Length: 344
Image (tube, rainbow, N blue to C red):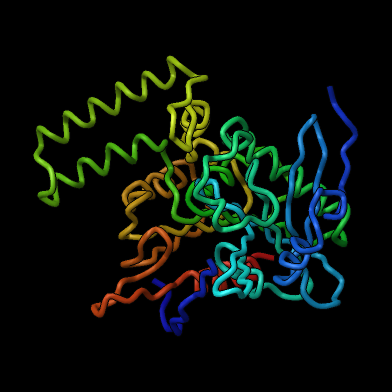
């Protein structure tokens, strides 16, 4: 855990076609949606390519000319970036996730990308409806890498002065996306890998079954049966790559795409890497993180910095004895940015 840092709880408000970069006015979105996006300092852009559209949002504070960029790639669920609701007749609007954009210097832009089908501003009451078909059809590791690669290239070309840092960090599923993105986009100068797994999802599922045995929550024989069932399920996924189980937010295509082990991508990377793991992570087992430094040491690679958030959960929170949660996210984001400055 980072030492001597004041804990600050983080508020959660919660055929090739020509490539075009267009501002939000080209999207069928009214002034109401624009006003919510702009309230949080963002502007919507879109890239039209290969009969598809990538929607992304750029936050640039102040009037200082922009030279550097930070791109955040979040986790797996089909969630919007902006939403609103009416509470007792009053409009409440939200930006989803952490407010890391408030902690970047004024010569930076901070960028997030909408997942397929989740662009724009959503009414909160619509979020319980069925998962958008575009999300189900498009969502995969390669699709998110394709999105991020195009967004980086256009931000560097259209929005930024030359020679600056291109920083990318991903959390949870974003860990996997960043790992592969680093083998595709060579403009990236620094990368953060937060609370993810070095191995495929199903490896994590099986590891958690074994951890349940150690905790006395599951018998050895029961865990073995469940692991056997997971292996059969995994085999069936690969045997039926186009299948989508009704009601699931993940298709077999999605599971297959994330079967690539991130460690196999990371060992190919030469730029500085900042890897952050949580010891009490209930989504990405902490023990999984050991694989990356072990491989780097074996291969003689020295571009990995490892941070461990002791006692933290998947979202970098620590639960206090009183039952409250203290968030370390803000502290680690600041540490991450400072780390990029030490590696100029």
